[in-house]
Image (tube, one colour):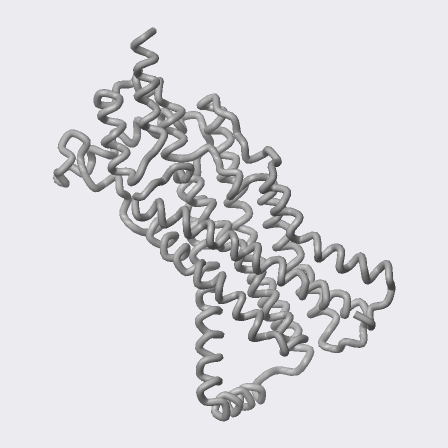
Length: 366
């Protein structure tokens, strides 16, 4: 009994980790060379550190509702405004435009807070400062929600710039704050998805050697079987879908930000040339009807890119829930707390704006 208590005390050292390679060394030392009975005693600590049982600040139920609100409102309002055309005589379109302005102000700060949080936790993980609470599945969710919060912002900027050019620079300035933060997440995501695994960097028995790369793989399989043996894991095809659509969506976000930023710089330095180039391009622009169709097509592409991101989040949450049940731990991502409510209520002004118009019926006086 005393021996078990002592071992459980040693398991606490496995609740924190830096890099995967260093953590494997700690497991090796703590469990006397990956002894099966000692690994079983420390299973909860190991599985949580390596894969994660969830993080309600990232993928809690309230945060998921917040992402859904941002996506549905962002694309829904844009589609409606595009369908109603570019005229402002329609009173319902005025409601939509004012509501969309309010939505953008809510969404951009929602996205900015998410980007800051993602960068902070990813920097700690990527530079082996600490990876506590950021297992492999939680990391993938972090990459996904960072992208998920950016795509509706592009849609909002494109839509609002067509009907409200006065604050175009202001909106892009706010977007750039999110975009700069997202750039680091993009780099972290690409390195995480396409770089060689850390498991191939050394040997458990000879920590300074790189001559036997298969040594880590053997121990890693033991840990995978212990933690994920009966869990419905990601297939190779599912992982490819996540990586492919994640890369595609990220490239769209990075490309849009770079293109617009370069255009603003060039047009600001050479305003006459920029205006001439714009006028030349307008000659090849199709008519008003086709412009609406092209705009709707662009919105559809952006919306299409969000669907795999939501699928990835829900798929990874299911795996985390199964993992927590397998290790007899509570799954907290389905519990409402203070942060979950805030994530939902941040979009309340959009609904109150619409409600105000509908109740007062005085749209033109706003």
